[in-house]
Image (tube, rainbow, N blue to C red):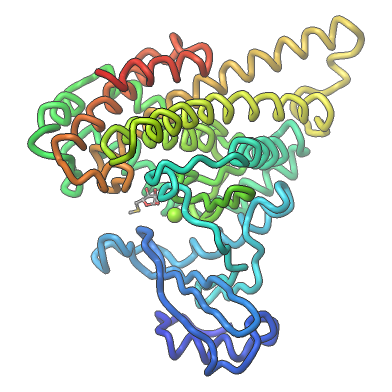
Length: 418
Ligand code: SR1
Ligand code: MG
């Protein structure tokens, strides 16, 4: 444990050399290790350290938002919540998160297994790569982390302890509350979009009271629905993949919130990969098969998640929600099953709404994504973004008309040629 300072390469080398478990993981002497800072996210430093025997990834929180600079301070405590979430998720969804090798609270630093040859999924999707394991793994991650941290699996006391353990992560929640649920719908200094093409659309979103009601309902749900331990930032930049493995990283936004926020994040980001595809150079065959795969993945994520969640609910419901004693006998079992179906229908509605919110914030808010940003031709980029905004606006305003995930992919397919 060391006092906080922002680590540079030499300092990190000396620090790691004092940790026997890390030294043994890397092998050789500290002088043999290569260290490079590779962080390209919005908030933190990330170092890759490689030695003769193996490698590690080291993440250190900065006392400010990296994307913006020191003018936007951010508590270092997020490293504590990220570590706590990683430990929880490793228990709830084994093999789907990186193993933690070392954590230092005061330094706001966590050393993890190096994920190699994994790449950030968003980059793979921009390259039109499809991932055969993804649906299976992410649906397991979602079903297991959400179910086992909910009132369906936990006693009321365990659940309340869980909420309390993450309650201090409010600065990160506030980022979400502002950047996703408020700023894209008002004039905010840091908003930007592909101008001038989207000027009129951005202004229309700022003046659309129906949309303001819809996003405010979602914001309230985000703030006031501690259903389960959510990752809190589950976009495709928080997922590392190979053809055969999926790892969910970066849970620093974790807190007890609505389940649909995580599921919607995955689905919203896949939809953006689909609608950005038209702007990226690829052969017609490659484009068609990639786009077909992404929409299959959208359907698969919801269908597999809901199937697995229901299996867990039917077999592992040891929590204080829906006491078994109230649903005895055949009639009770049938009624409880109907209730499960109603619960999933409500969760699907939340998912559609949150997916839409995730899309809109990436096009009209502060933090954009490279699915669109890497489309060099600005007019073409704006076309892809305008399609996404049209879809997202409809998903948010007409949520009840999306009763199946097929309705979502159908609408996305229709918008692809708008
Ligand atoms: C100022 S932080 C902007 C965004 O980066 C993170 O990845 C979250 O998505 C956050 O909203
Ligand atoms: Mg992140």
